[in-house]
Amino acid sequence: MQIVAANRIFADNYQLVICDNIMAFTEESNWCEGDVERGFSGNDNFRMVGTEADLNDHWVEVAIADEPPNLEHWQRVTCLGLSCNTGEIHIMSLTEDEPSISLNLPKGYYSVFVAGCNMGIDQSSLDENDELTDEQLALRKDLEWYRIFIVPGKPFQQGRIKDE
Image (cartoon, rainbow, N blue to C red; front, side):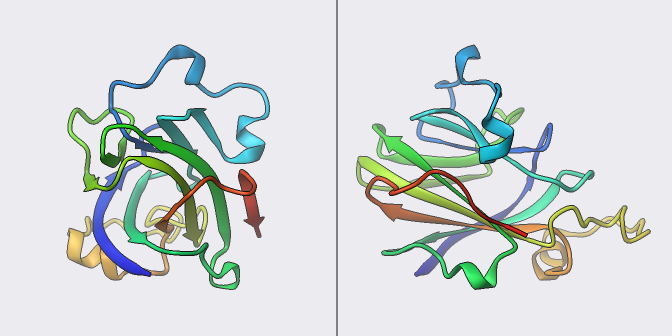
């Protein structure tokens, strides 16, 4: 496993976007019955993954891996399939015009594991009012944060595979 990117992402409407084309969203991709329970919605090229913390301000790391993450290190892990037809994968807010993180990867199908810790915990829930810099937020592993593992190949299962 190798961490290849990291950035602060504002998870507008409690969701992170993972896609190969920022224009691939369709109304049919939007959240519908059953999506909340499985932890994500979307189509094969545009996925939206649910978050918890009210401030929607998260540190997100991206790792390229050969195998799924070790579940014991994470509070929540959601697995989804993503088809990459463009040679790029973007991680961003739903309202961004430009992705916060973009990766060049071989075209193909990927298993994406969105692993999170400290679900629902943000500065507001800790009665903190100071605005954090990106560097400070990256170090705050006591707040809700994510590591997205991108693994080549289709997933064996999709949805929340761990949720404590």
